[in-house]
Length: 193
Ligand SMILES: [Zn+2]
Image 1 (tube, protein in one colour):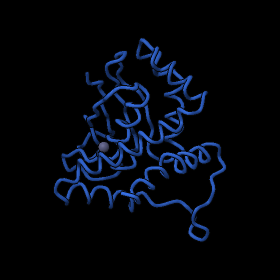
Image 2 (cartoon, helix red, strand yellow; image 1 turned 45 degrees about the vertical axis):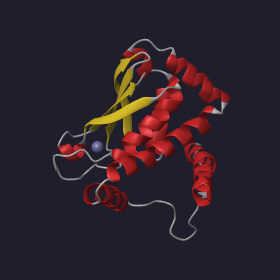
Image 3 (cartoon, protein in one colour; image 1 turned 120 degrees about the vertical axis):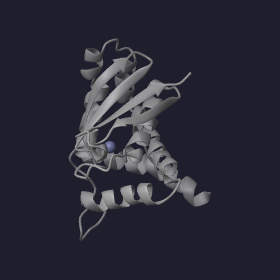
Image 4 (tube, helix red, strand yellow; image 1 turned 180 degrees about the horizontal axis):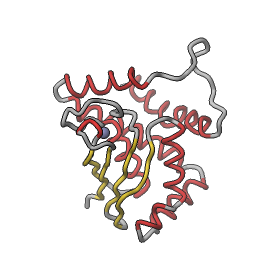
């Protein structure tokens, strides 16, 4: 488990730091010659083929997203300013309040700067559930309508993040997906207790 533990540590610190640098507009370049951008087609090939053609991989891909989402949210929450935003989010009562809260604005920025998609909140019940819409989702945008949801990594990623923001066990499921013919993805995250 040594290598795995090292990777988790890396994700929760270095990757989160790099995301923050990206956010600040000054990312450290990892690949000197090729640059750091990867084409979406390459990414989708990997994720969707793993999910669709390898039995039992949905849970694994979702678990990977969950680990990364949780690690990044935990790291960011160490910063007092983000911790304050999380507190504000927890105190929101209405959908309108949550749509305008700073934590959601921050998430929108994070999703856009890293190219994950265009995030918005569509439904909200305090301490119970939140629905997140992702347009131009990195995992499925442009895929043909195959009548199936494919965004298991994103699903896990959101689950991991909101388990930190709520400090509770949560369950996320994808309700709508571009690959299911919906035009965008929508995820429902519910507190389980
Ligand atoms: Zn999707």
